Amino acid sequence: MDVNQRIAIISAHLHPSNPQVLKVPFHFHQFLLQLSEFCFILWDYFGIYTLLFLNAEKMGENPILRAADCRAKGGAAGFKVAVLGAAGGIGQPLAMLMKMNPLVSVLHLYDVVNAPGVTADISHMDTSAVVRGFLGQQQLESALTGMDLVIIPAGVPRKPGMTRDDLFNINAGIVRTLCEGIVKSCPNALVNLISNPVNSTVPIAAEVFKKAGIYDPKKLLGVTMLDVVRANTFVAEVLGLDPREVSVPVVGGHAGVTILPLLSQVKPPCSFTPEETEFLTKRIQDGGTEVVQAKAGAGSATLSMAYAAVKFADACLRGLRGDAGIVECAFVASQVTELPFFASKVRLGRGGAEEVYQLGPLNEYERVGLEKAKKELATSIEKGVSFINK
Ligand SMILES: NC(=O)c1ccc[n+]([C@@H]2O[C@H](COP(=O)([O-])OP(=O)(O)OC[C@H]3O[C@@H](n4cnc5c(N)ncnc54)[C@H](O)[C@@H]3O)[C@@H](O)[C@H]2O)c1
Ligand SMILES: O=C(O)C[C@H](O)C(=O)O
Image (cartoon, rainbow, N blue to C red; front, side, top):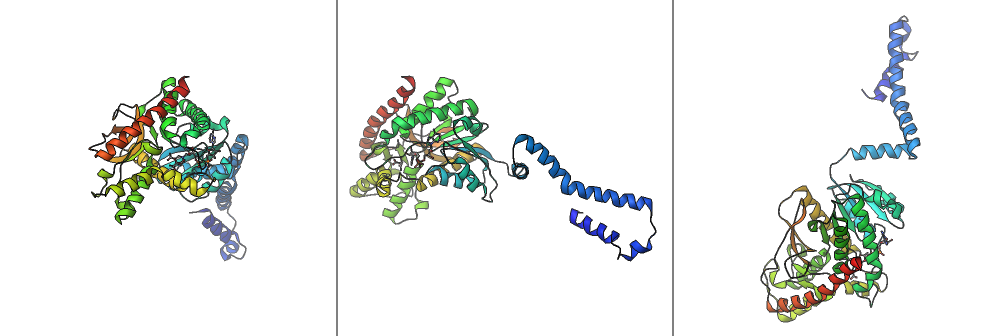
């Protein structure tokens, strides 16, 4: 019986117009029974909230929100995910899409600006993940504590005329600081690194983790999914197919010629003329620049990147859950070439990138592209490594 039913019954009994109340002589035991009913109602209405208020006042929090948070925490089981740089151009739509992901139970949004605003906004979405905001470096440790997956889109984006490597001086330091936070608060988390230049920031992260003695190469993944997303889209346009039916492996790295689409391995199997191959390869390699130029100084890809990041993060979470056969491209520690890092297809599992696949047969065009990619990649990787070890 709920509180309202109890109130209805008791007030009906006590109301002077109730003939039974008038007729039935006063009995002390009935009076006690009714008194106890009233006590229950008072407790239901006021007692629990009084306790919550007293407890929450001590903790300096709004008790009603705290109660709601407790209920939400008791909800769906899932993974704890942090987004670092959550108030940015990528961070905001990425945070929104992660809030919609049913595999996520707790979502921590960290930034050096505007994290509370983005958090308040996203927390009103009626999906199950509980959202908490963290602002500034003094809250970095709390933001990261207990996380299963950390997604990093923090850092400055390109303007027209810049290369991704031009971002190194600012973003290298940002990535180092964030990775030092991961060392302290969630050394076993999977890390999805988006901040550019990815070809250097992934080696930076690896060196920070190595120095701290927590490096697990399987758990550090540079996000190159946007190259795959673009490749699927552009190839589908040429073939006249639905992009969701097209799968293009993109290997190497994430900048200019290091982005190497393997058009000979497109699924469904198809063939391209030399002109189509040249056109598609260039368009995929220059996809980022195409957006930077179109935005004319207002930044680089944010919405398609958030989409790609969430597609990749979802694959990582399904891998962590133990799903079989999750294969995506990522920039990881690798023995596929002589370079210590290389993007290729990886199998995602409970331990992260559990298997790194070989490139498979390449045609002559791709072999030439691979040599160019490796040359530039070697320099970018070395730049990242020596940033930490200088
Ligand atoms: N891997 C890829 O495919 C890919 C694609 C697109 C963009 N990017 C890169 O992602 C990065 C972010 O791009 P954006 O468009 O979102 O930029 P943005 O400037 O819109 O957002 C970056 C956010 O990072 C925050 N930030 C800065 N320093 C920080 C710190 N120390 N700790 C936490 N947060 C910090 C900023 O406050 C800002 O909110 C850039 O480096 C960009 O080049 C990578
Ligand atoms: O091009 C950029 O600077 C951003 C990103 O790396 C992209 O590929 O869109």
